[in-house]
Length: 469
Image (cartoon, rainbow, N blue to C red):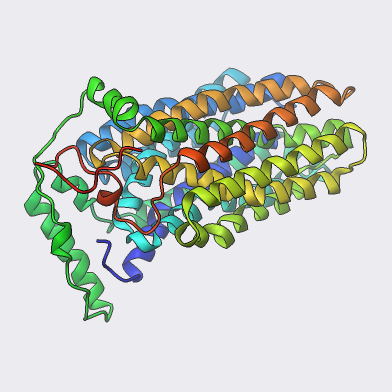
């Protein structure tokens, strides 16, 4: 798989699987704009909890579907998790009260959490090693494409000049946009194969060979007739492992690869806390401190900056290296946020300049945050790759789930800037610390085969792939 050139087959993976992040960005944007708050009689803390309950759903979904994806295969859950999301998000649009909304936001989160684990695993196992970093980071960055779609939709759906429409139906229609896109995504996923790496380590050698043959035939049909030869020196012998127990998983994380586990935890916690803190509270900040009536227009450049960051910086993770780029992106994001906190506290910013600072900070943060999923996927064996993503994602989201409620409380009624300023400094400190941690103890995984970075648990005999970092 790593020797293959980039072809239309790989683009089909990008468009078929990568669109999951568009849905997540769309969902969170719809919630953060809080168009439902007045209709359902919700205060700032309750609006924050609407974001928190969605994140809790993501945690549960990641843990449940992550284990199932490692046990039963990646492909089975491409559709199942998407359907769970479609049901949860669609029904949430009919919410008659706050409690009903929370229940179905939780269900929508279940589906998106499952998407993260199964799909990140499949992407990294199907994309050639020379392109894996930039593709993974760019795909995770498309989250902000969804956020931009949501911002544009909210600009029209929540327009105060159409009060009856915006208060009664605007936010409800917004919740239906994701399910409609999801139906298109189901169509795109029909021809994406199972991961041959997963098949091989689960006793399905014939199926794995057939999958690879079919992929090569598709590439041949696209006009690529001279494929590079297979490097026989990288051949390994594996046995079937149907299930990995909890003790073995803990041994891999904290005995065999403790530095990798520590790096991954720090990256997920720091980026999740920062993003959820800013993203779920940005509308409240604009409304309470800058008296902005329709916040959606201010979010569009913020979302575009986050989308462009991974696209511009992603290739450097494959060329300059993972550790250096994580240090750079996390560090710059934290430093810019700290400067903006000082200016915010002294009243030197307005709605436009506040948004500019957010755009610059998250241009870098977006690329760094996207790389957290790449690090989790690359750092651990194929037999528990989805679970590794799910566990560390869950830890990050548990920490991040506290942020919307916390920052909603720090904002209050907008009469005092100092509590929120301290909150911004906390987020900046966490990001800078995350970048330093990754630089000091992270793994140099750029342009390496997954098996060269981490040998499968199912390997028979010794392997040169062992790197206990």
